[in-house]
Each structure stands twice: as structure tokens, then as C-alpha cells.
Image 1 (cartoon, helix red, strand yellow):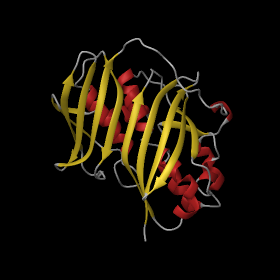
Image 2: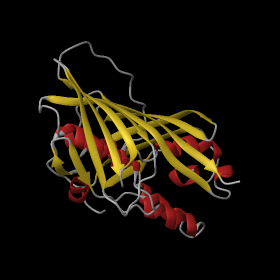
Image 3: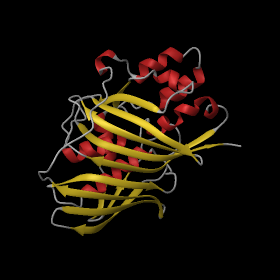
Image 4: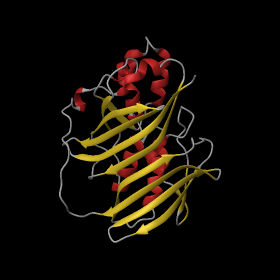
Length: 286
């Protein structure tokens, strides 16, 4: 996938009936359906069933089975509740009649209230950083296998500019913190609901990786299987994904072959626009 137009077309589902939608798959190089795709498409399906003035404020999803790239995914929306201020939806994603993912999402009419947030970390701005693809060139000769694998999975639709040394972190043990600036690589007309869907898609990049950082030397030996188990997003304030956003991530815990990571998304002015949390499987072959 090379352009934002292609990504929006991927997220935009075919309508089967009022509560059923169908989507195709990004041909991910790792051979399974990308979790961010299912998150974004599920949110798209839910958005089609709520009034226009209601905006998503949170979603909570569970990955049940790995998605097969060969088959389209059908999204079934349960219109649980239409309240005075909040609308609740449940979405089940299915392949061949089996559930592979389910999500609860809540939507709200915008309203005034008190306002506070944590401050954005004081980090190097994106203009002074190189992209993850540019950083990968530094290991091309030393680690050709890792270079080819990592280059294949880097998204072309987004520009990612890691604050920390991206390549070093994936080779040596380090602290469970990772910060990266990101934005879509080309300008486009994008509605607020689609902004949310694009952020859901992008939020699955680098998050579980943050939980691996204290253990890279061990996890890099032999085969390790990675998979998202659950994923949650809270949309706090409006944003524009065409402008640089800071994704500041940390991992408080890893245990029982699972890694837990959190992320805060800030705009260039330091406004906290979203919060993310995920737990994923990090299982080594015996």
C-alpha cells in the first residue's frame, strides 16, 4: 500500500445491509491480517450506524483469531443503545463464519466541560529527525536479514520519525520507552471520523514493540511469535493526522508471555488528542 487514497479505500467498507459491512485486506508481508486494519474497519462499520453529530470517544477490542489474508472480513454491528448523549455499538468481525475480532465503541455528542491534561514530553522535533526507513539504511550491510524484514513491514502511507535510535533499540536491550512522530505522507481531504479510523490503524504500529525493548537480545534468538490480544483507544480532542503527531509509548509490564504497553498521542502544540493501551502475545518457541 503506497498512498493515503489506497488506505482510505481499504478502510471504507462495502455495505451489505444496514448493520453488515464487508472489507478487503492489506496484504501484510508477515502473512496475517494487520490488527490496525481490523481496528480501523471495525470503527468504520460502527460509524456508519450512528448519527453524524456523534463522534467516537472510545473503543475496546479483542483479537480472537488471526485473520486470513485470502478472505474478506464481514463486520456485523449490534446497535446496542441510542441515548440522549451517548451511542453504544458492538462490532463482530468474521471470516468464514468465525469471529476473529470483537469491539465495543462509544460515541458522544460534543459538549462543554472541565479540561486538563498531562504535559507533552519535551523531545526532539520531527524536523531534526530522520525517518525509520532512513535509519534502517544504517544496518543494511551489518544485518541484511533484519534490514530486509524491517523494511518490508514499514508503512509507506505514514512518515514515522523515531526520537530514540530505532535500529539500536531493536538489537540491544533497553528501557521500555519509545517515542515517534508520525503523520500521513500526502495531503488529503479527511473527515473527523476518518481521522479517527486512520489513527486507529496507525496506533497498532510500534506499540507491542515497546514491550519487547528490555528483552531484545533474548527475543531475537530463535523464533518469537507476536500477536495483539486486545487494544483500546480514547479520543480526547480533535486533531489533524496530516500534521505531525507525537506517539509517546511505554510498557509498564511483561509477564506470562504477554507484554502490556500504553501510548499518548499529542499534536505539535502539546495537546493530548488520544490515549492508547494494548496487550500482546510475545511467545518464544521452545
